[in-house]
Amino acid sequence: MNTDTAKSGKTFLTFFIIAFLFNVAASFAHPVTPTLIVERHLDSSMFGVALAAMMTMYFLFSPLWGRLCSYMPVKRILLICCLGYAAGQVIFGLAQTEAAVIGGRMFAGIFTGGCFVGMANYVINLCGTDMEQRGRNLVILTTIQNVGSAVGYFIGGTLGLISVETAFLSQVAVLAMSGILWNFLCADDSAYKVRPDSSLRLKDINPFSAIMAARTFMTPLLAMIFMITAISAIGQNSYEQCFNYFIKDQYGMSSAYNGMFKAGIAVLTLVLNMTVSLYLQKRTDIHRTFLYILTACTVLISLVLFHPPRFLFIAVYIVYSSVMVLRLPLLQMMSASRSTPSNSNQVMGFYQSMNSFGGIFGPCLPGSSTRKGLPSRSSWLSLPSCSPR
Image 1 (cartoon, rainbow, N blue to C red):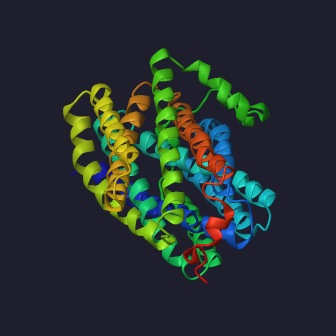
Image 2: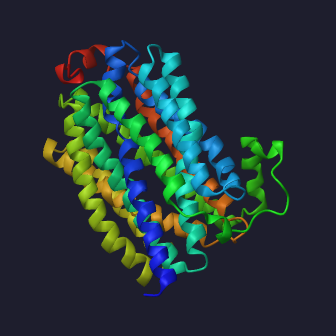
Image 3: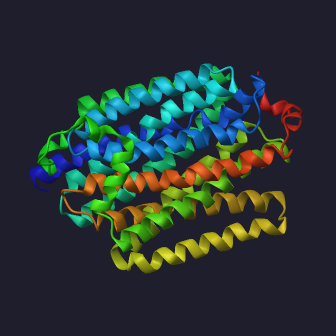
């Protein structure tokens, strides 16, 4: 291994370790959010509505962060966004009203997109034209994001048994620490990317203009990839939110159980991404095999429509969630391979925006069902496991 390769490997190792910490912390609050809503006597639909509010800002601002990645070092973007995300979670954790919950989640959503856009662009920029390394590192990043998220659910659920505040304080501290570590320990990617000829103008920081700028690189094939990204995200988020509600309302399971299921997903995701995903990228046409993954997910999720026993219901959720993750590195590679060095940051910003677009509507579906009484606030309050204290 030559010096440049060793240096590159060391650079990515540091980056991936911090990325894992960030993704673990990002999920600390999810398993305790229902408890926060119940303890503060908020409408039960807030679980889905608040997440949808966050994802709306994620959708609007991701293209902007993608554009800014062309002008600023990505590690600086990650620092700003981690601190902003942490501040938004402080507001959320202290919220006593529905308006404060939505406001805190929206503020956090402005910066959350920048974190995920920045991570993807850091990998793409430092890999340059080495497509094999880019594909491998995107798989690693996606694996880290999903395994880290699952581990974070488990830790957050455990911390929630102490108190909601413990989970939120831990999250804020680790998010802020992740941004600081990225900024001081990771490489500056400025030398690896094409800087725009024109300087950054005030109108360029308008999130709507950043979205409209997509027309400069959009093609029919890219549009179809982005549409698939958004639609598949709607399905995944809808199932995820319904499952979280269902196991509390029908099975009376605490946040710790949700954490254990996520731990199972983490293990299976790691195995599948390090074997199946890498094989698909190296040995197959991902444009075809991607369809097989969606078909498998459709078959899996169809099984829950036949009222299976509890153990099968949970097993299908774990397997489905792990298999569904396989689509992410493939979609990222399909998007990145149709970008140029001058617009790759913007393309990945728009990709993340479409991924969050599905998250806007997915959480709202189960959120709206709570207004029809499934589950109602009374059913939540009847569960002793909802409030661990």
